[in-house]
Amino acid sequence: MYSVVVDASRRVGWIEVICGSMFSGKTEELIRRLKRARIARQRVETFKPSIDGRFSETEVVSHDETAVPSTPVHGAPQIVLLSGSAEVVGIDEAQFFGLELVPVCEQLARDGKRVIVAGLDQDYRGRPFEPMPDLMAVAEFVTKLHAICVVCGNPANHSQRIRQTTERVVVGGGETYEPRCRQCFSPDPQPAGRLPSTPAPGMLVRS
Image (cartoon, rainbow, N blue to C red; front, top):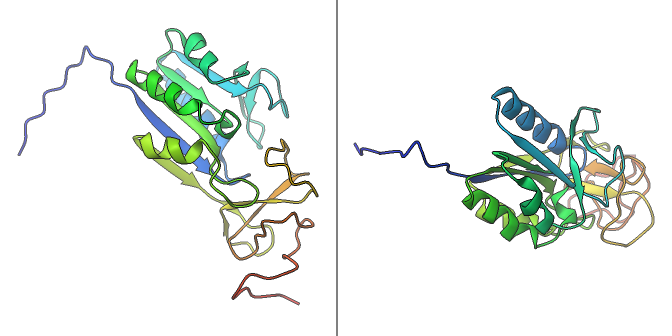
């Protein structure tokens, strides 16, 4: 049995990562944690990339339309400057910030803040989407969420692009993406609700 002495006067920060595909509930889970922090009377600041104005310019909004106030920023370094005396810092759509977000989150955690980050861990082709893999590596806590595949109903961990565009970053919702499982996913844009034209090895093709 080990004795552990905790210095209660010292604020210890950490990083929590919430990741998954589109429509897996990442933002909803982020909002849930931030609301609980406010109930606990903690000082909370929330940030989102200014590129994402799908639902609101000044709020983080989930697909089920729950929301919390947020500050849009053009780059990750602004988060350090604007977080001030916050005890909890929430960051949504982390994949739009790029790798510069990683040292920012680590700095905030070293400053004694609880940092909660939500974002896509894969891009539309199923490749790791920076900076999420790096954040997952340095985080104390990682939660991976799953959506439901719209084709077969199994757990989905991919974001299937259903618009014919090959840009890596395309901001959109249900008109642009849908959740797919490993078997129903294609790295190439596909029509909504349709299996890939070239099935993956071992895929069950339904008539």
